[in-house]
Each structure stands twice: as C-alpha cells, then as structure tokens.
Image 1 (cartoon, one colour):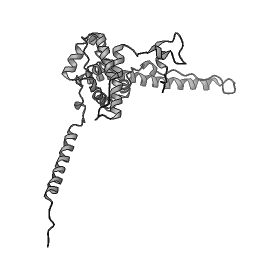
Image 2 (cartoon, rainbow, N blue to C red):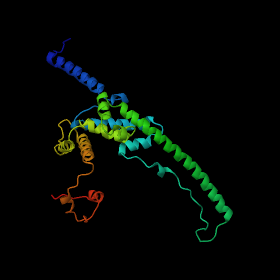
Image 3 (cartoon, rainbow, N blue to C red):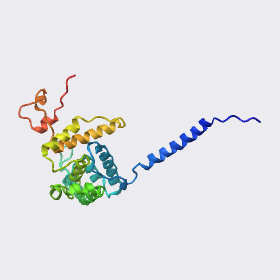
Image 4 (cartoon, rainbow, N blue to C red):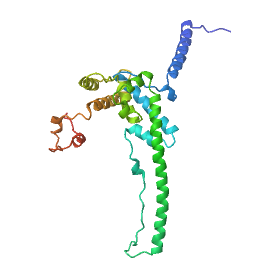
Length: 266
C-alpha cells in the first residue's frame, strides 16, 4: 500500500505555528489581571491614565461585591461625589382629615392611619440610620483599600504632599485624585504654572496610539482632562467664544457659562 509523501516544511511549519500560538495564548493569559492583588497603582506618565482607569473600575466592582452594602460607597468612587446621608432619612407622613369629596373623615380611621405611618417611619428611619453608619464604615475601608493598592513609590509621593494630613488622609476621593495625578508623573515641588502648562499640553497634544482602541483613547483623554482641570482649579472658560453664544447673558456665573453648549462652526 503506497504512502503519501510528507511535506517536511509544511509539517514542521504547522507544528511550529501550533507551538507558537499556544505559547502566545499562555503569555497573554498570564498577563490578565484576575484578582485585587494584581491591580496596583504605579507612578507613571501621561499615557498611564488608561491603566489607572482599568484598576479603578476593577476596584469599584470589587467594592460592590465584597463590602457590606457596598453600592453607596462604590457609586461615590465611580461618580466622584459624596452622597448626602441626610437625604436618606424618611419624612413622617400624616393622614388626610378629609376625603376626596372634601368631607370630614372619621377620626378613628384617621388616627389608625397616622399610627401606621408612624410605624413605617420608625422602620424606615432605622434602616436609613443603619445605611448611613455602614456607609461611614465603608468609606474608611475604601480608603484603606485604595492605599493598599498603591505601590511603595506611590505611597511615598502621596505622603510627601503638603495636603496629605489635612485633605487626603481618610478621604478616598482626594486619595483617588492624588493617585491619578501621580499616575501622570505629577511633581508637587515644580512651579505651579509649569504643572498647569504640562497638563494642558498633554491634553491638547494627545493622539491615539496604533495599538490603542477608541474606547481606551477616549478614557485616557478624559483622565487627562480631569487632571488639567484639577490643576487649574476649575474649568477653562474661553470667554470670547462663550460670549458669541445666543444664550449668553451679561453677568452669568461661571457655572452657567460652563453649562452653555457651544456649537462650533463647520
């Protein structure tokens, strides 16, 4: 029985490609960050903002999954806004003394309804107080988690900041802001105008990399914008452009001017 001739190059090449692909898969899989310990904030440069965002998203989901009633503190971390816990407190309702026709209701019926409202109010207030206390405890836990995810170099940089004890310590949002700054290689001891200039230069000259997707580039650009805005102390308002808007009014506040949506020509 005849044997088919074997193409040595094709055969060896096929095996070689198989080994290469399997090795590539193993290498790529080994780089995937799977646990909280894999997500660490390092001192970087302006291009490191995308890595910062990936770490922060993982930590936000980790907080929701592992913290007791962690949704409130996770939303705070995601939206950079501390909730007003007083708004969680319920208000005591009272029964209407008149019916829909405007006639006086039976007083016994009104008293019973008011007692029911009181019971519901006490229950809701107790739940709101527990929620507020849990949120307060989770804020401290979140700060500790973010601090633990900082590299030694990052921790040293943050501790050396002038406002560490007064503003950053035990404040997760201020710590998050400081981490973002140092992820972009922020140095506090330089001249303030030099810091502002570099942050805006990085923003205005940012370009999408060949290996960077549109979503990643958009997030990196957003982080650069936030860095520049924080260094400037507020939004950059180009007054000459704003005043050309039909909605502009003399004496508008900065917030109102920022809210204007300017439609660029073209």
